[in-house]
Image (cartoon, rainbow, N blue to C red; front, side):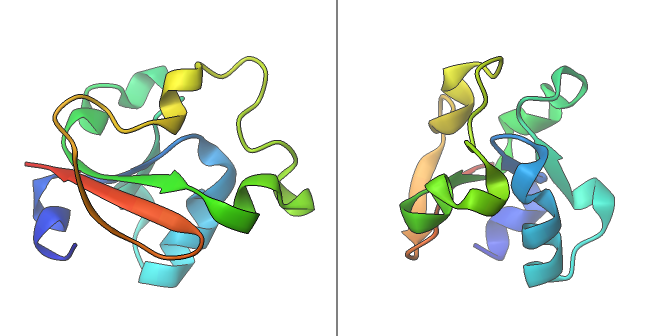
Length: 96
């Protein structure tokens, strides 16, 4: 996953888990984006995509992780991204 960090930002479905990922990996604001943010669409085509899986997906602190007005495709890997790893909370995909 470290090698893929040089290819682009870490892209998450929406803004809800950005603080968690920034804290966990000690990243600056510019390194983590939300795929639901139309302004970030071009940046979200390369780098790392994190998909939320497991218990966090329905955690009460996040409400429904994918909101009704979100495009459902923000919750699946984008074209050209390949699986690299997962844990009980997240799955990671990369594209350089």
